[in-house]
Length: 92
Image (cartoon, rainbow, N blue to C red; front, side, top):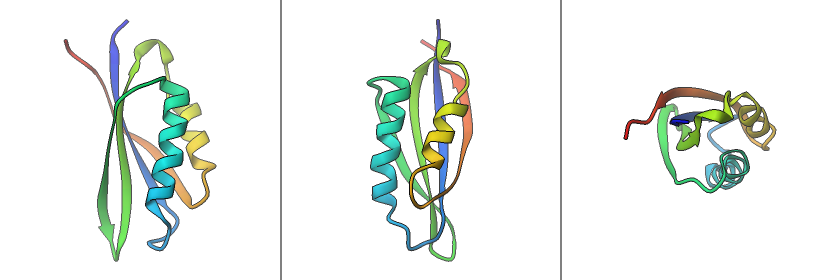
């Protein structure tokens, strides 16, 4: 099976929410779902001090949809929404 590169965009409920706490908990959920994978995390400015958290990671294509992962991340305190903004097959 091929590998798939996934980028999740996590929106906090407000600019006051601690993104580092969300990041740590989201990374734990991703590792439960994808196994021991490397993660790339960045903060994307949205507006008025609000920042989104974007986490990119690699999973095996056999995992299928990321819906279950997105739902588990939505349950983290302070998270407003989670969306897979990019999903593509890895080459090589």
